[in-house]
Length: 429
Ligand code: S3P
Image 1: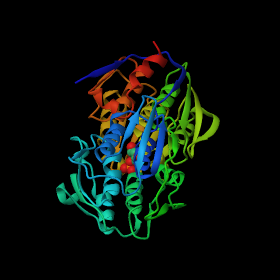
Image 2: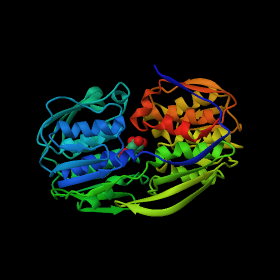
Image 3: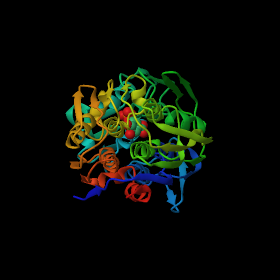
Image 4: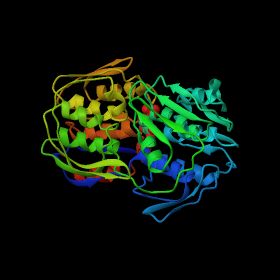
């Protein structure tokens, strides 16, 4: 198992770009394949998760050319996918398996989805149950809760579904199935989750209405291929934002980052903690807002984080906890039970790792209470196969009093293959 050691830094400086947004990259392949005609995608994230989605569509007969810069997808129209000849492996990717389950529920063929040892433990009923209400036949282990999932698609009817969780994966799976259903399909959620599917459906010309708490899509309408430019992933930028704040003597410009308001919870949290972050040159790319983010070292203070902020920063809590550990005072995170069913249980993994670094953390059912200490001790911790747990602790290592080692770092390639080289580029010894 490969491990990596970070040395304490005296500053994080320079100008970087982060790789393309993972959520938007998945959706560009999916909607591009279902549209009629050609879709081009610039800035596609070639991480393992997105490659799982790309390979799934190739296995369903979609031609996708990659010249190393731009992907060219030969869209098949709503009814042009072919039955895959084998089980489709989604690897570690929750977005691949949950969105594909929705899409495959609408196809008149049989398919089976699986994933790696971590994905096969994650809950799938949250998509299987509403899709069954639409008429899909889906079987899985543990009564349909766990992958592998076997899907006999077709014959769907529209539903009006109130999701018990704020989850873009659930919402998107239902909207994808809704493209194939009779009539309209509506999803609402307790708090608004990321809305990339809604934006991209509109961009591709689908009939979609968006409300405060959800969206409605009409079945049976063809979409048309488009040009997509994928912005930098704010969830990847988040690691460098925190690095820039917690390492004294830092000033870092992160260019071309997606700042969709359903994703900018991390900026709101770090600003509330007293972070010096400015958004520059705000613009739009393919229906998504983008900006350059300038971050400078700051004295942070503890805050309370809950409610609608949680889904807007859902992937960022491992690194928020690092900022909290470096802050003065207590940071409380609540309403974040979803963290227990991510790539790993991120409440338990984050708490364990911070304790190894000498930080006092109380785990709660739906969050954690971190007592800021202004420093981290050197330590060796495990990633538990979770890319964001690994990257968060490596960022913590930049501000620690001695080297921090993270074991089993191969998982970082799921979302951020260039992470280590960017870290080495900006960190001053
Ligand atoms: C994602 C939605 C979120 C997020 C995940 C990507 C997406 O998951 O954690 O990394 O692309 O739709 P949930 O929908 O389970 O909250």
